Amino acid sequence: MHPHFFNRQEQSSILAFAEGDVNGDYIQDYVYIVGQQSSDSPYTTALTIVVQDGKTNAFYNIPLKTDSGYEPALFLGDFTGNGVDDIFIRINSGGSGGFGYFYVYSFANNLANILFDYEVFNGENQYAVLYEDQYRVKVINETMNLTSTIDLSNRDPQYLADLYNSDGTLIQPREGWVSDLNQLYPIDFDGDGVYELYALQRIIGQYNADGLGLVQTPLSWDQNKFKPFFDNQYVAVLGQPYR
Image (tube, rainbow, N blue to C red; front, side):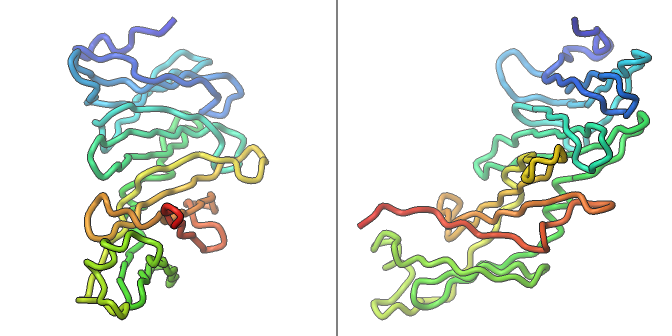
């Protein structure tokens, strides 16, 4: 039975629910995403995390900085290794770019502490995507000083003809870009009961639908923040029809 803690907020309802020990007292707590949704649209607003202490039945609100979007969802799992479940929140933007809004909160001792903020992540790494001669694109993470190269030679000939001369040289300088965070998945990579994060960002060529690949960044908790495994990340390329 869900409590009626949201009656004071007109048209508010429970949009997601999960159960786990998030305050560290070894008693199951109840975590909700509460918000407003109109009857004729899946778009949700005024999203708030509500935690009910399983021991005292007291309620605690965690306001979200980005508090609107589509299909809000919850996942509870230990991301820091302290044996207490943390709160993972995903909200879809619904835009053509396929962005998501993601947060991870600790609620140990009934105190909310943000562990991951998608806007902070988006600002941490600066990228350059540079087209080069001979059907290559260089993806540069300027913050981490990492480079990867994408081979475009298997792309559609007309696509290449719009970019390259017949000798493989660029018709003119061109750049693409790396999108903000598109997807973030909680994954226990090594099976030790502590979850990591797997971040995906699209590499975009000349227009939004021109996907060149994905930047993949596995993140693990390191003392006070999530950091890339071994200070590394990966670029995955999109398969093309075999010719």
